[in-house]
View: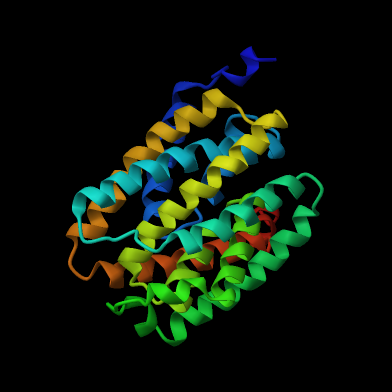
Length: 269
């Protein structure tokens, strides 16, 4: 059983797809979110992992990639993580609850609910883009309000359950509720994801729902992508504008995936 957690039986072409997906999702997760919509199918259909194990295995790459991204953002300077504890703590508690009930919840109904939320978020992104691309000074003292604590607890609850798309919800909470710029929100998002991924991964590991070999392999490629994403966010002029455009695209693709449109199209061919 322990040896199976490290077995890596993939062909060369599968490894190339695996590596490309890892780097690409590392970039996406750093700048926006929903990279797990790519890695989860890779784990299930390429690596042959059952869905519950793929869900747990995915947390290894998310954890390590987030840590690499945090260090990269700190090296660029200009991003402060002060006063973020009041956003991290409720997210961790939510993630613990979400991870604990992941095996008993109806995933299909959850997917429809998430798809509906992402359709709503798609229109939020389009209707008033200035709220997303502005540069502003947030008021960290308001992070202690019960509304923000409840928002981030709910995000952690979802992140602990399935992970895919949690970055988008975190960005929405950080930009629209906590009033951070997209660049700063991306850095704080990585810190929050890193913190709540630790207890989530432990819970999945205890329940033997983690393939260590594939998880660590994907983490290497995702970390490369995270460094590329941070460099883009810190070096490219008008990075907020480009990140916003990527968000719109990712939300649209994510919503279609969760609502089953991909399966509907595939069945037509």
